[in-house]
Amino acid sequence: QVQLVESGGGLVQAGGSLRLSCAASGSMFSINDMGWYRQAPGKQRELVANIFSGGRTDYADSVKGRFTISRDNAKNTLYLQMNSLRPEDTAVYYCNVRLISLYNYWGQGTQVTVSS
Image (cartoon, rainbow, N blue to C red; front, side, top):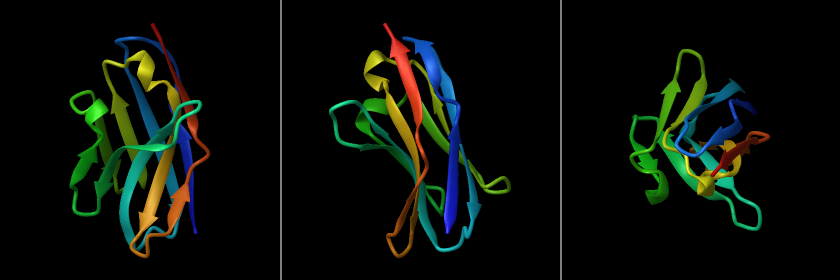
């Protein structure tokens, strides 16, 4: 079992920055990758960024150059630094852990609202 608790969401003006954190606990073995997803009202959940055990990162095209995903293994914490935020980044952001077996764990989500 893996438990995930997100924090750091909030309201910010366009052009501003936020940093999301995801504290993970439980069995952290056999992890394939960790990532951030988001879901805006009326839209499907989409991948924002993920980081693999070897350190490789992937980003959605819409956030490349603006968002940075990182992981502190000592603290079992995943981060998402979001800069140059846009109104279209408004969504609930979810932390995800995917095991080698492809089983997924999800956090409860944190709201990010970007005002124009």
